[in-house]
Length: 234
Image (cartoon, rainbow, N blue to C red; front, top):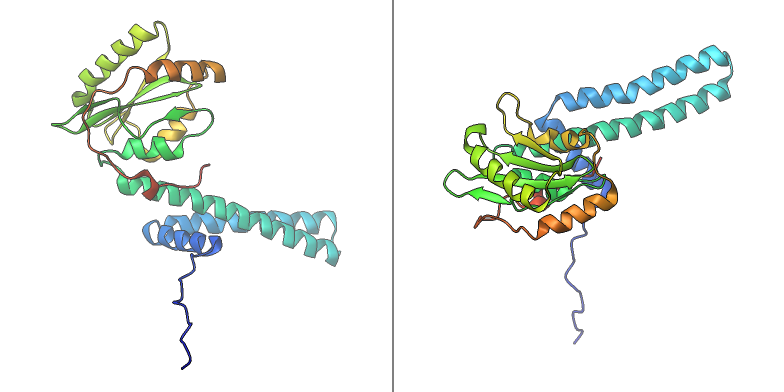
């Protein structure tokens, strides 16, 4: 009797293009303006390219075709960049206000020699307000997640701890919330990168190791899984 050697079919993982297309569709659904921005980014290079072709080589069909193809490819690239950034913003906006949102951004979105962790260095279990720490060219940054009033004591305690270990080190404070003067969650990494450079690469590494010995003032439950909001770095 013939044996049935058929193996169960395994579902193929979606390719990179399909993943990108799915991400863009979700972004367009949640942020309709993203389609407008992407369309503008696509059309502008084409218009500029055609104008330059007509001005510099009128009547030259070959030049027109090459310019059109080149400008179209550039437009597609710019449109993809726009959609990726809008997708990142949309993903971060969905977790805004949730406990652990700052940790998710710090653990998955930092670059440019910046270091951060998913877990906070201080936490109030009653109000769920937390303080995170990032270290980079802009110095040591304490990032409060919650209201300004509720974070005052936590931030002051952390500044004193750091001051005892690293006297004279530059300490910046950011509050991530929707209050006046606060930083929105999708603006956090950009705000960190804009800080004035006060530390070089070796100083960042040394300070990071010194502060790692301080530990954290918790217990605190896990917040948001950073893999669920991991986006392509800018």
